[in-house]
Image (cartoon, rainbow, N blue to C red; front, top):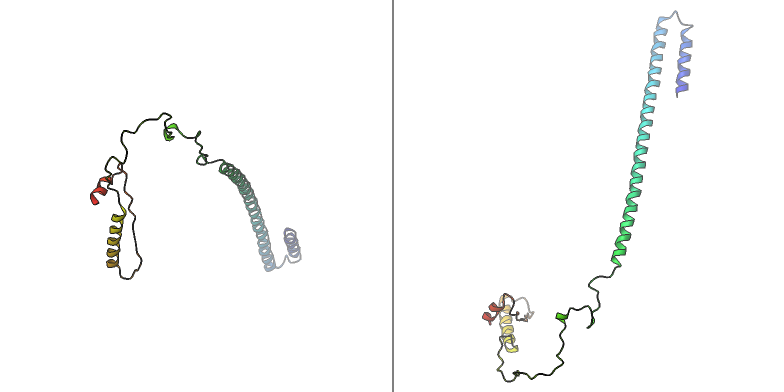
Length: 179
C-alpha cells in the first residue's frame, strides 16, 4: 500500500511540471498530495497501533495459557492426593476381636471363682412400671379410636410402640407419671 501511494504522489508531482501556468490544477494537485500523504500517515499509525495491540494480546494470552496449565497441574496433584487419602483405611473399620482393640472396661468376664447368690429373682416380688402387652393393647385401641374420630377419610391403622426411657434420661419421671 505504501508503494502504490508513493507512486501516486510521484505521478501527481509529474503532472505539476507541465501545468505550472494553470493555478487551478496546481491547487487541485496539492490537495490530492496532502490527502494522499495524510492517508498514508493515518494508515501507518493504525497499522502500528494494531500491531502493538496484537503483540500485547498475544503476550496476555500466553501468560493466561501458562497459568491455566499450572492450575491444571495443581488440580491433578490435589486429585491424586485426595485419591490416595480415600484409599486409606478408615478408623471405624477396625475389626473387633475379644482380645484386642477393646478397652478393659467394656469387656465383661465371668469370675473364675464360684459364689452363692444372696437373693434370687424368684424370692422377690417383681414389680415394674414398664409397658406391658395389656397396656400396649389399651393404648393401641385408644389411639385407633382417636385416629378414626380425627380423620374419616383414612382407613390406616396407626400404632405406636412405646419404649420406656432409661432412668438416667430426663423424661423418665414424666414417663412414670403418664402411666
